[in-house]
Amino acid sequence: MKFFVDTADVDEIAELAATGLVDGVTTNPSLVAKTGRDFKTVIREICALVDGPVSAEVAATEADAMVEEGRSLAEIATNVAVKVPLTLDGLKACRTLTQAGTMVNVTLCFNANQALLAAKAGATFVSPFIGRLDDIGLDGMELIEEIRQIYDNYDALSTEILAASIRGANHVKFAAMAGADVATVPPGVLRGLVMHPLTDKGLDAFLADWKKTGQSIL
Image (cartoon, rainbow, N blue to C red; front, side, top):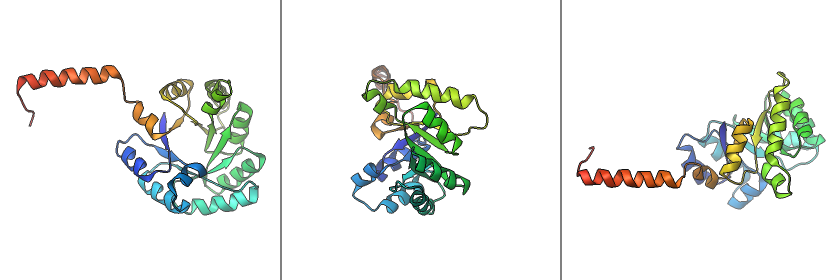
């Protein structure tokens, strides 16, 4: 499974990209607004830090305007993925942009039928928001499983499932088990995946034993 980091903080992205674990980045208007910086400048800097897709979201809600904004965003860098909402206008814009060779991330997906439509519109990625479904008492992970089953039924569908609205390590694990192609995670969640108290305890023991030897590797 690929890991995208869900942030517009350039410093965070640079630090995490250095680990080799980051395959792409997702942003949205809220994340960019938190930086207090110029939108296109932020996207351009992020695109220079990672080789993979960088999702940049349109602000328009009407298809023609989405296409116009999408084309402008795609001109920033070759790895921009234009993010559009899962509405009829969004799907129309998705098809137009995809046919022009632009990557498109269809976002705000909350059921399997929506995901099927996104795939038929040619989306590069569809983003089911599992955390927000959990928030209202539904099973977000069940949606990932349903989309995976539908997509696997049809060889012609090449859209990747991008598990979004991830709240913690268990969401990542279960999304991977359900067959999500990508998980987009906040920086803190990505860092937390490496952590386990027994790892820390074992390392402390190894270091203590090594210290007793009085040796040095270098």
